[in-house]
Image 1 (tube, rainbow, N blue to C red):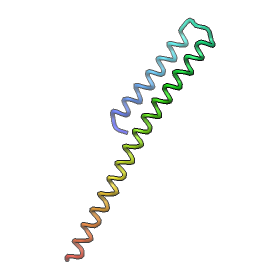
Image 2: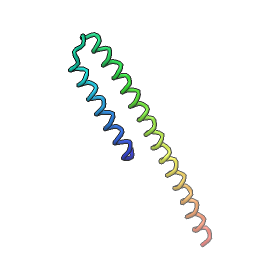
Image 3: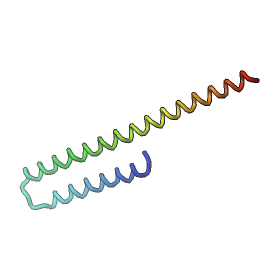
Image 4: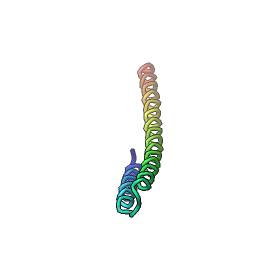
Length: 84
């Protein structure tokens, strides 16, 4: 994951921690608070899933590009060996 992905994950973790602390200190009934916590946890999981999918796609693209480049270099080396 690149630096922006790491920063985004840190942001999400901080936001989640702040939300939980805010809800725990809020003067509301337990059932209302649990409902809010559940919704925020679901949102956080959705955000993390989206970040994971984006990171996985980047990694897959990098791996595919590396494989294609390695194959190209291998073919070039083979051609040079055959020409000598």
